[in-house]
Amino acid sequence: MIAFLSGYRREWLRLDIVAGLSVAAVALPVAIAYSQLAGVSPVHGLYASLLPLVAYALLGSSRQLILAPDSATCAIVASVVVPLAGQDPARYLALTAALAITGGLICIAAGFLRLGVLTNFLAKPILAGYLNGIAIWIFTSQLGTLFGFKLPSEGFFRLSWHFVSKLNETHGLTLVVGVTTLALLVLFARFAPKMPAALIAVVASIACSAAFALDQHGVKLLGMIPAGLPVLTIPAIAWRDWEALLPGAAGLALISYTSGMVTCRGFASKNHYDVDSNREFIAMGVADIGAGLLQGFAISGADSRTAMNDSAGGKTQVAGLVTAAVLALTLMFFTAPLAWLPMAVLSAILMKAALGLFDLKGLRELRLVSPKEFWLCLITLLGTITVGVLPGVLVAVGVAVVLLLITVSRPHDAVLGRVPGTNAFLNAATHPGLQTYPALVIYRFDASLVFFNADHFRARVKTVIREATAPVKYFLLDTETMPLLDTTGAAALEQLRGELETTGINMAIAGPKHLVSSMLGKTGLADKIGRGMLFPNVESAIDSLMQVTLGQAAAHGAEIMRR
Image (cartoon, rainbow, N blue to C red; front, side, top):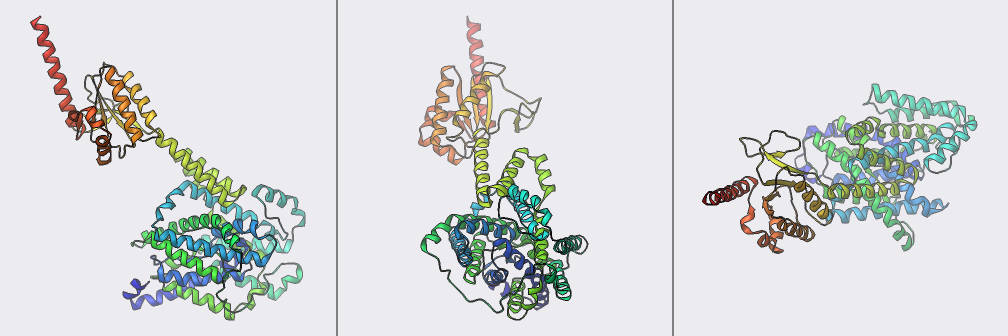
């Protein structure tokens, strides 16, 4: 922020103030609603929104990103804390705050260690499945409140069964309030997307609730929210509890950071500036610690509030400071009216957020473009709604790693031919009419030659030579697409060289990069192949090998003539 303020323009202040007020109009009801997902009382959602906005304004590298309670993050918080807290609300709150602090410390450490690259393990299909699974989980978890009865906190299929079995307990007026609110939110999103629909719904429902005394007709209300600002508090839990939170905090840090970075990079690209991924790790870590010390819960980059900031013209993180100020003033002076807020309205807000997360079009496109990645996405989705958020994601990451190893262990390869009249070489199997050379096979292996694909490489070369249409005298390995050769790969290459030599086939290598060339030298394989059989590129290798072949053919012809 200091860099932004050094070049801050006076005309930006009005835009940042308007954007900050607009974000606050959305952030206030959403923070209260998301407290339900995290499993804490509504005021703690507001607590979780204060220091993160200030911390990110000072440390973050994005001009538009808003850190706030996020549906996915809240779902993870609940999944981690519920098994540890038992039925003790005070312990639950302390563990929730401690989880935020622990996750924040992990983020800070990751930032200093420059581990932003770790987020690449959450591939797009995993993130898509995770977010769609979260959307389904949020939607179904709010059905009970929307219909006016209580549902147990269980997996998707059990919860759905309990919901169907309790439909006869539906409270009609509660359902009318919730469904009407949800319908209005959907209509606002379609026809007036820039309006603070959630705030309008909250204000209107509070007015109706107070005017018609909805609580006396069985509609459950939010109740009193304590006024005033929270004080900094270190959670009072045992050391073993901090240790028990570590695995969940690590998963929370990775997922919330990745989710936030998707939003961060998207708006940075839209507004033509760069963000620092490792600095973002540190900023988010400090923000999480601030949320935990104020008795809040872990936060992330909030896409809806960031979009509101951007569409309202926010230029710098001053807008985030304005939002924090509005939330603080609300806590100090305007909590009393919130007591009249129907719980069904909060459920409708959460369900609308879930509808926004669910991306059916994206799932269809992924199925058409890459069925393998679609199934990975589906595994993540099913894992998220059945075994839980973190276990589901961890299973999907494991499956992704296995699929990656399978893919790289059997990489694409090709027998090459020359485009006539050029120095371009293409796959002879897919490009008919290429120029080939007698007694020479040109083979390209499109991956590093390492321990997990070395045997596959040898088997493929033997198959290629066996299927050659003419006797082979030279095997030319094009290594221009081979970035790395390890000791296992070098051993496989040496074994292959020996096997080819016994059948009268000479091995040559073209275009070795630095790491490949270095390994050939260190293992002595370059000398065994022969320095004269190592070439800078395929063209020079062909020229040399064909001259030798033609020379040998001419010598052989002369010998026949002499006889």
